[in-house]
Image (cartoon, rainbow, N blue to C red; front, side, top):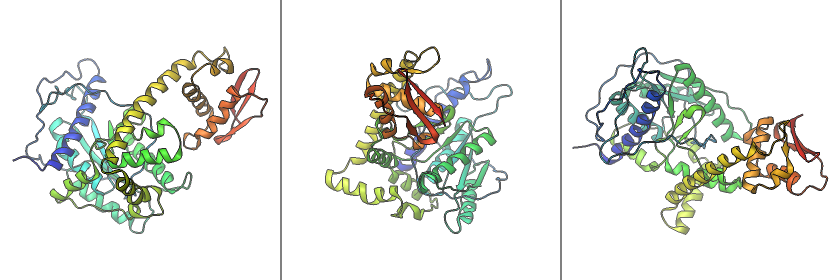
Length: 401
């Protein structure tokens, strides 16, 4: 008798991602360091191999609500699969080349605990080392104790190494954005410290739907509507195996495995925008439009991502043809481009000059665009990050200060 359907679903999602990581790990190996294995790996797993865990790193941690992660849209290419089996898994080991380490970011909530359990089950079967990290944002009383509990649960699952890291949350961009920035900085540092090949995040299809709606409300364009990428971050560090699974599946998987979970009170606090959307906005949409809203929004994210990726590629190619010998953008050539491509070039130029991406909005780029398409002698445009844009001699001058 196989595992419960919810458990099978989370394990399959993680196995697919681990297979991708192994494929990349082997492709990056020096000649002869990773010859491919020709055996197929069945979808159904058998029995859990016990693993001893050593000391965890000291610190603290227990993060708040899920947040979207604005990151590069780099989807990892996956080979076609035969139903019931995986393609041949490249052997990660070679002379002097250890198995890749994959970390799971775990808050102790249902989504991330389900993810941790699936990683602990699948990693040994594919020759992957598995560890975990939990981040203590220090936003609630007792968060350090909560972090210690999460560390202990991850150890019990057999993960090693396990880190708990305390962070200081600033105020830039509001509490949710500041907590997200601190969290990802801690995850990046942990991945670098351990030499991890990837960090798994527990965002589900429900989180994706919320992210799409938040992007729609901001009016930030198609990139915001594309939600969270399955693969993002520098060198594809962050992987989100659960984007096609709903939140209820993850919770059910925890329940049938008797995994204790922590329900973060921030997830139900109406002071947070995402919390209000989750508990008021989405239910109201489903009541008005019927079931299937979450699935439709998740599909919208993928379609929008495909379109945004194509336009970004077009903009990168077109940018080379609209700069003069000194590297300045020529307004006449920019004006001849489609608006979607032109504004992407302008945004890239502003970011390159030092404008912070999280504070650079569509309205800023629209003002810069008017220097190209509606020139009436207007003055310089001030952008976030003290970046100034002015038109001089038919060219745009974009610089800080």
